Image: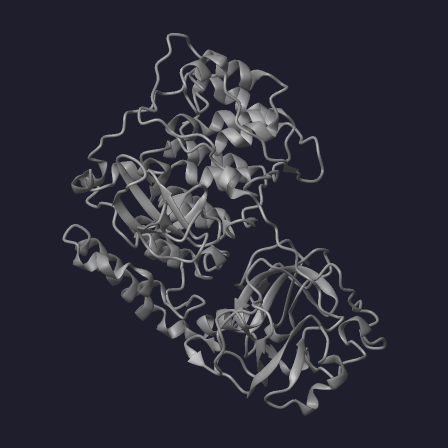
Length: 583
């Protein structure tokens, strides 16, 4: 809980009006450290230290620096996340401000701060509720990892936070995909990380166990297979599998809903995207079949009160929004909103064609054939590989192999192969969204393509300092801001107590990124045990080799060797999970 002597002040600060109308991305900064801590060769901010207190109370300490403190993955910080959130708001922060280094907002940080063995789940629960009561964007994704707050809470298996987020959002984002996990849902993440409690909560709130990731895998297929051979994990694996099988059987009658999600994927959309339909702009809140008409429908919360309902039709609620902000439209009529593209207003749609969406140099789609070079949605160039009807939606569809890796699939949707191409080169589009590129345009790059700039961040700078083995420190002085609890010393047998140890193939969190353990053991370049991690993105240091010694194999710059204390698995420091036989 937030400490009593500080709670009233904390609540008052959050009640104050915010000083800015628009959220801000705060530039990256290093975490501050007082001279006393520096003299003791400590590398993390300590809220129990009077010198660090003075830094935190100093109005010159910026929001960027406090974000840098929150990034430090040690109990002293995570167990007192309320103190740092309070200080950020005291400096006039907008509720949706983000950390410029990680692109995470406060809810992202709080969603993982209650991790077992690191944080205080009660503090995290209370701060999450306060942030949500102030209107923080519960659907915001971190651009770096493509993870929303729900994904972080599931990854670190904090069921109370998962339930809070699903309750507030009415579980509208429960099946939202995450690119960092192969475009899987929160249920895929929970299964791949063996987060038993999160799997249970997600299924309770209606997570769809039939939804597949970009490789066609169901959540149940993401459970690490090698754990079935582990005597300690076997029972847990079977229990998770049984829950999923039961849920899949129960949802078989709702198979149409699964197809609607596949249709979304084919259209390049996902729930809570900003979309446009008939010139009206809003947020996609619902996708699926309805009782008022056949086919697949989209429920949209408009930006302005010019709709027809509040998400309810004929007494059935499909989503929730303010009165006259909701509309429904056939799913195939919905398009992802592009702020750089103009649209026809509803009043003029019948008399004025939308020339911005029909480039004059492109021919009619009526004469398409397999092998034609085409333009999709006026932006992407590729070749027709499939024409015809599909199982994921009604109508005529075009399967296209793109020239660049900017697609959604490999020619398969919901386990059905329509054509074959490399992963992320395939895309499906309705016939009216595809235009044939004339031969004279085929010799050069199409002028209508919009370049996509990549946001490159030096992610190796997330944690510049090493976390010492003994992270606790006593102080005879009382803290002026509050009286935080002393962090308990972690038991070296924590992994044994939880009935699992770190193994190759497990998912870990290191340097604020997701990776897979590929090596555990001693190395020639240093003392003690090290972990070899294969990162999902090329932000590593090697290909699994160090100084000519091959410890594991991966793509160049995807490999990283770290001490176990620098990584976490299910929110637990990996130093507590390494089997004693490696020591």
